[in-house]
Length: 309
Image 1 (cartoon, rainbow, N blue to C red):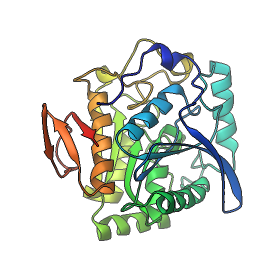
Image 2 (image 1 turned 60 degrees about the horizontal axis):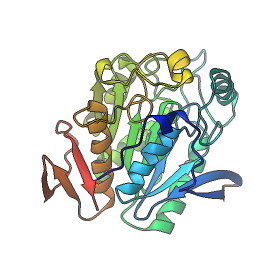
Image 3 (image 1 turned 45 degrees about the vertical axis):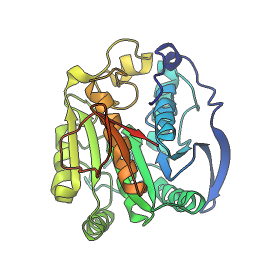
């Protein structure tokens, strides 16, 4: 069974003591990456404003499901519960960073964030270190569409896009160059792969127009899940999510309700099953109290299943 983490721990800084901290240099750039677990690799990319206790909690669930987590530090203070001021400062810094393409600009032409080149190199390294059929990747919020861009790396087999929020100034933008988007679509079709995607219905930063654009570009390979706003956690949120995000947003982190039967918990379990199906040869699931071998069908409605090693 996956661990239930107390609400109190999610409102205190997380020392990340159960992760190994590595400084990894790829393509001439060095970044801190937090590692934990064994098994095939999954790249967990943090949401804004950084690796919060809630993001670390999700990474631990991935680890407990039988994977090696690679969690790169892309912005913010690792493990911290930032104040509103600190979180906003991190957000503004990322918006003007050369690594990210946060805005489409006046032309409306979107571009792929340069940092995804480094993340693709990390996926290659993780696959070489961990083995298995390939690598999983999940992006959230500011990094939401990065998992899709990483499909340009052949090692990535299981992309998950959670509440993709870029470009910030274009509700129907995808934050990829047309050339990269075409290449990703060709690969999805050729290799018969799919992309799982999640958002809340009333999300201010990831609206229906964005998912419609993804669907138009990727067709049936884009498998969208839209959760009702009533499924989002409302109590005990940190000040950044209360006052800056200010809407249901983070499906598997800050707004997840860790209780049986909750749609957000079902989304978490579906993601873990998706990783297991793509990255492991045999998957044992517990569904409705019965254990059985099962093939994940991304077109079927989400069900609450727990991946067992």
